[in-house]
Image (tube, rainbow, N blue to C red):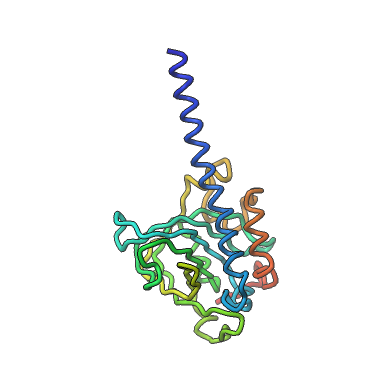
Length: 231
């Protein structure tokens, strides 16, 4: 009997570790996706837009899923600018909605660039609808793109996708974005709120260092904290 209980405990621990590994691996994968996208500046996100970004959301391997209304499902991470640098990552889930033609029948990496305080404040909610509560538009691509266009600078969220090696601005409407509190608890070792993570009230974990390092060269030179754009 004791052997059986011990075996069950071991299996349970292994299952928990697998889930923990999945949650932390997502952070590393998000950093990798961003680094690869920005590895070709002429086909990446314009530097000027990134310097004004208030938050960055990265969803590696978003996929079509028949059980989701609208057909899209993915998990990723979100980090926001604070007075002391970038916040720790908060795990997010995105479901449903439409994401343009690029998603096709396979997986797609999604990047969301939140351009102002209005958009950032909406992201602090545990759940909201993109294109409904928060306006989104396809972002420009390439270092020479017209990033100064007023529409881009005033947009709440600029969205992008990468599928089959092609990176482009993408429309994102009707998708529900919500925090994944269970994964955040695994990452931070305790129950923490989505808003506290994104406002920098929770110390960023060591496993987030590669993601922060990937973001720093591109979004570390803009304004921070109370000096950030107030639109």
